[in-house]
Length: 204
Image (cartoon, rainbow, N blue to C red):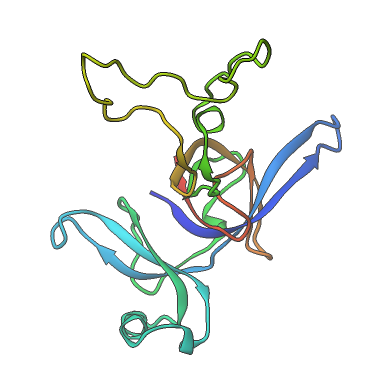
């Protein structure tokens, strides 16, 4: 398992100098991520590594957080994330974008952009009713249950409510380019989350 943490900088496009083909890419500032902790199936019941990302001033962390990082010989970092799977890394190692190669398949996880409270048309893709002949059912969801049976609304009914702001994993992405000097990963296609959002990039 190969993995790294990163920050979404935004989207761009790259043109092939030979064919002129345009490729939409997401620019991710990934790493360097020091390994803070290694979990093994013998001791913890599962295999994982804990990575730190985004160095900050000491005053921005609590004493327990600083102590946990200091124990691994790592400076203060804003984010601590555990990535499951066997990695072959040890505490003190640093993961950089060099671990990935162009053309490699990856999956990216992040928290999607929150859309707030939305209706059924935007949230679930319902179709609207007619807008003519005095119709009062333009963007309403319609009936949500019968009266005699079941005399209630079934759980999981698609209704209006909060949309977005949940953890999303986007599979089937490909690394287009790796910029080692600037710690950048260019991934073909779009990834979840807003600009500056925390991302987990793991080999597929």
